[in-house]
Image (cartoon, rainbow, N blue to C red; front, side, top):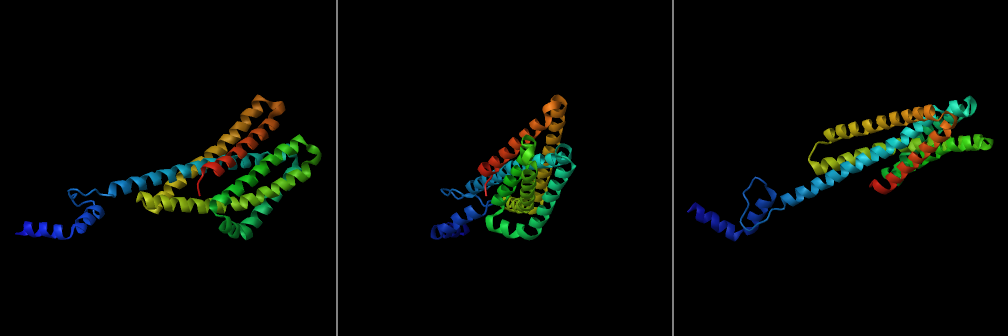
Length: 244
């Protein structure tokens, strides 16, 4: 009698059986009914993998660009002299602080974290290129380098708030699609970013040392040329291969 009653309920309410099979993975599959769980899980996993790749690409491009900037900053007074290098570094930090305190939040809110990142790395490219231009055309080194350093400071003030928002947004989306807690995702993503950031800073500085040893007479021309190419390349990567 109970079996007959269950069969009658399934015949009268077939949608309930389909819903149970679709919603509850522990339920046995109803004959003739295909569950959407496997498809949905596959889509979510694919989205999560794409988000992870996207974050890794962003971290590598960001770190490459920033590594070039930090390495150039170390050579400011060595190659450009104490006065020009010192004034340039001062301009960088002043504009960085002013932008971070007063302009970064409204600008990043207006353009979004990805475009904020792009503006930041473009500004850093101008700063790195300013070093190369200053040693190639010393007659106008002062105005060129001071302007490029000021732009670099503005870029830095935009870059880090944008990176923070982009990090948080990407981590939240990854957590939603992978069923992993946001705290664990944040920890994993922070490890990826820190490794990339410190790794590229080490690579760019070691590269400069090797070039100085191998080509002492043309070292700074080569170093700043390579840094400029790397910085511009990272901009292209963020523009073309990093999603919103």
